[in-house]
Length: 272
Image 1: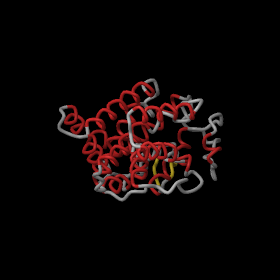
Image 2: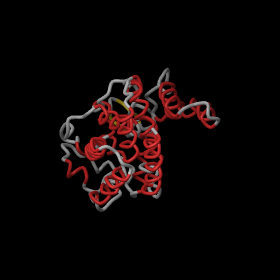
Image 3: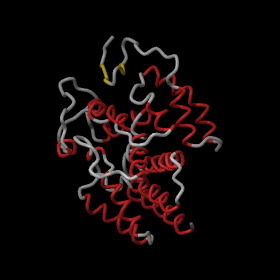
């Protein structure tokens, strides 16, 4: 247990060091949120083996160190992860599974087909946790944060969402794209790509990618007490996340002229 705790602390330090300078869409805080969500999913699914939980926690923490969007040499960044795992003295099966999860969990690997590997429970948990952080209010904020950091156009009606994407086409960094198109090309699809069945993922998917700006405003006001409680240490991230997501959907009008309207899984841009 002491060795596992030490490995987790060192992983957190590595994440802060390698991801600390990134924009807030894929920074160290994102990795920590994914870790927390992954452990919550694991608990809901009854995963209790310390060895397997360590796989989940370390894979979640380290999953974006070699993110192609921020690196010129993915293999070099993966070698940082592999070297770290060896230094921590993990069992070979743990090292292999963590690396397999990190290499295989990205949306790019499923953009045109199913997962490139047969997912283990640990794989499914970490991947779903990452995708939960890409949907709802947090996901919307992350999308526009990333687009702003890369100087992407917010919306251009002349640039249509790409269809029938290949992995290579999806990963091509030089093609001009808009932040709005990312919803069509990826974010709206995630709800049908989840691999776990838990109260967390089910609650999230009842409202994911459907939040109208008016709903977001109401949601913002409703979760403020929860945020204050969290600052006092009385509310966990999981509880805050679930309560805020649940509170933002009931009794709100959807169609409001003059706003961007979420409807039928599509973003309809309307001008009053």
